[in-house]
Length: 302
Image (cartoon, rainbow, N blue to C red; front, side, top):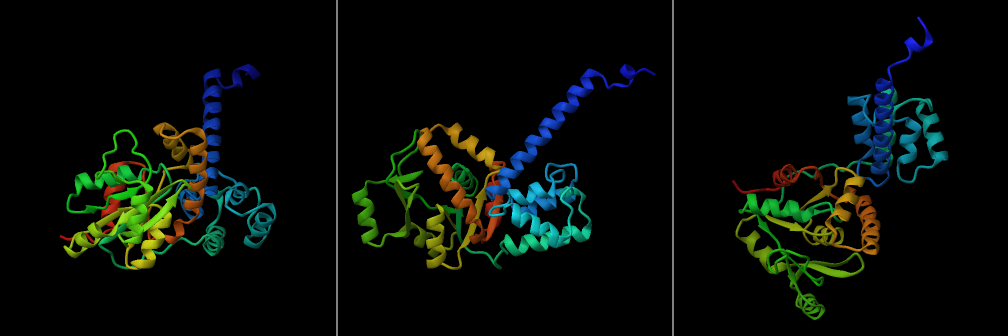
């Protein structure tokens, strides 16, 4: 048999090359997700355990550790030595003991939140810019009319298609100042260093008094204020399927210029880093599924 006859057909080599490129891109995307905290490191390790051939499973442990926030080469090398893991190992190729030790190392440095017991009728939905909070909330409003969806007040101008009193109460700065002074806002904050948003207190109190479940769609600062004033509230953090998808959604909606997009993405990284303050995570990979997941976390009257 000649050397030429032993070579794989050209089409096979091309297909193999495409698969290799796709695998590298998938691993690169996962690294971005780990670095921005879109994906928890424990979740990546679980994916690797479930499917060693996946992007997580085929990632070298060295690359995995370097992708984590605040982990440099020195910390990576110390971790490998302490864990007894070879630098050439891939996540999907770890033995049970190595994997357990790595889980322990991750839990000590990147603890996953433990869901709080019980449910609350005051449900807070927050998440980074462009993650789809408004879309998920609108789906809940349309499919669960028994849930009161709070309408926020904002000083920003309406976007195309937004209706005053339905999507937001659009007010000027003077009216927003009056609402603050009168104690009419449950929470309020400056978002993206530009516009102010707040939740009118009256409709929320009335709905809760009537025994209804209330959903607040607000930003991180507002969620923190609600947690301080109403500790029993259930806080839900809406995650994008990936960092790349978050960027694509922000660019695709076309409502911000390049400078504003860059500012919002910087803010998104800060918001994602604070997700550990929340009680539950929901990934918005499909709006209807994400909406139902959010509803399941509330104390909805029968």
